[in-house]
Amino acid sequence: MATTLISGGTVVTATGRSAADVLVDGEKIAAVLAPGSTLLGHDLAASVDTVLDATGKYVIPGGIDAHTHMQMPFGGTEASDTFETGTRAAAWGGTTTIVDFAIQRYGERVMDGLAAWHDKAAGECAIDYGFHQIIGDVNDDSLKAMESLVDEGVSSYKLFMAYPGVFYSDDAQIYKAMRVGAETGLMTMMHAENGPAIDAMVAELLAQGKTDPYYHGVARAWQMEEEATHRAIMLANLTGAPLYVVHVSAKQAVEQLAAARDNGQNVFGETCPQYLYLSLEDQLGAGGFEGAKWVCSTPLRSKHEHHQDHMWQSLRTNDIQMVATDHCPFCMKGQKDMGVGDFSKIPNGIGSVEHRMDLMYQGVVDGKISLERWVEITSTTPARMFGMYGAKGVIAPGADADVVIYDPNGHTSIGLDKTHHMNMDYSAWEGFEIEGHVDTVMSRGRVVINNNEYLGSKGHGQYVRRSTSQYLV
Ligand SMILES: [Zn+2]
Image (cartoon, rainbow, N blue to C red; front, side, top):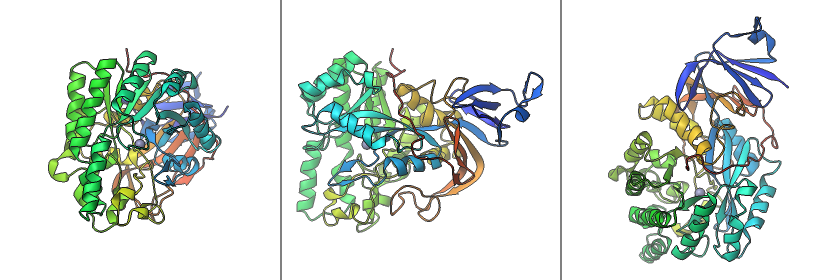
């Protein structure tokens, strides 16, 4: 087995930082050592196969993006990143594990959906991957199948309160599914928006001739998110199901989560980089059809209502526990442009899997979160939340050698003709200048990115079997 010494860096975990060398043996971290340690009197650096110099840099656990949609069918098309291109782009950005969503559609069987997603991902991924299970048709058969998910290494499932006729579950279905969640320890993930009311508002706006992408944000008002979040929390309270609300964007929804947590409920919230940096006015309202680039659900919120500041604050105070991307890319040409003249036909989604670690590091640069909190919200908490901690999310002996060497003095210019490896014809982050740079990425002991070169290969990434959430007692 090949050995590697990552020497001279500052090892950062969720709980602290220290000058340390990291010894990697095969796929695992073998030791975290005082700098310059010797091995039975021998210079360790001279004994290993490879030395990676991390002097002046941070050595962090690889990022875990717990919300991605590679090649997901949506709105008559399919997300433009495959498992191959999407996981390669993730690696470029310092992410070494994704958790994607297997889908059961209406009329389909749950285990058939899971098997289909295994087929899509197997042998394609550059980094490790796991699955959450979307339950798009809650019925007696799928409720039964849910009981077997944990045995499949799938410890979380997702319901939608939005998208009637596609993924939507009504309150009775949510109640029934959550009962199974409470019994099995499956984490209930919720897309919390009031879909039927949104669809009524969409129809009104279109009838008034308001067809631009901007109105996507108007129709999906914060009240729709707050109401659904509250309803999900109450159903979870009633059933005893743990609840994880995905892509929270409205500060009012955060307030609902915070109140439930203060009340002792096992309720968690995820936000995404777009809700921390982008807005209804500046992006969705960019003019004409340009705003289609940022059509995603939940939508970007008004900068005049200070949702973005509130979200940063919530990350600091742990009212929001982690950051994923909801990576779901579509090209403007041939995909987003299906919605010219009707914003409701624009495929929903933004591509960010490559930039999450860099974008969140800017919170450290700006003094909004600590260095340790950066590691926690991008890696350690996702690992614990979704039953991977120990193997993932930490730099410690016995953990998988998923390691990123991050240069705080480096620089990354985001743009389509600069750093861009996602399979898209635009960047939602065009022009962002990042302080910091992903220098080296190791996935289970193999260097997959080094000094702006991709050294990985498809098929290296393995399926991660997950246990139930380590936040539940
Ligand atoms: Zn999503």
